[in-house]
Image 1: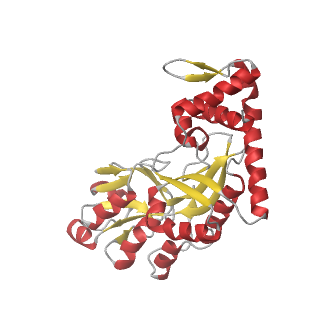
Image 2: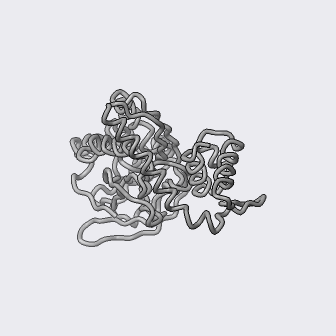
Image 3: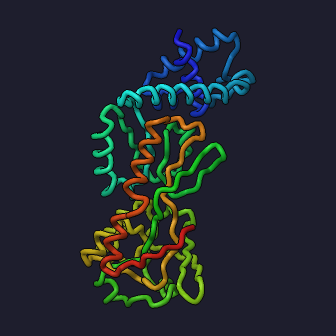
Length: 315
């Protein structure tokens, strides 16, 4: 019996609260994960879980030793990563949950450069707009715009995510151009459903801040769909500049209410305090910071054309 593998299986099942989900995360069969946990239970002479057809919950013994087991797995992963890093041969899998708005159109070049430098690291990138708990879902980190949901998570801020209202010139010629945020109430609007503030928008124009609760005609979890919706002259949309930039630079879309900038969010890497990804995660986050923290190319292009102001207000 490999004690480390049995402890790793126990930790993964406990965090996922499911043998099937733990097996998916570990890329093993459910029977293998079950067998490893059973081996550990036989070795300690006590059940670690109470099982029924609906859920899996920790036993008293499992609860007592879970945190120590989490720390052990984390320290072991970190130690082996450090040993391999010293030899210049970091290897293994890094699981990352990332927003489509960032990954589609921006991340592929970064991934290529990262893997050219660390060819033995396997990147498992899950692209989805859902807000996840990276610990429970088995990710080494989540790239998101929401703050950490628990004290067990750490947030590393990477870059400010700026948003703009924009529309096609044809739509504005037909329906008029808003001059004040409240003018938006008379337009067909497309909004992203995943912003932390939902449909409440904060405009930072002088001399006062305006807060509006807008009613969208189209609500979507896809900022790319909203960009295309605006390019089809269908309405005014509120989307991140990292998605809107190309359309704005080409003139397919134009900014709406540029003198009333919206508050921004931080795009961050959120991960467990136990730093489950070890050196691999540290290097991955450092590579993101090196590429994006000082210069977001999508914003630089808009600022150069006078379509965006250099300043930003961050939530």
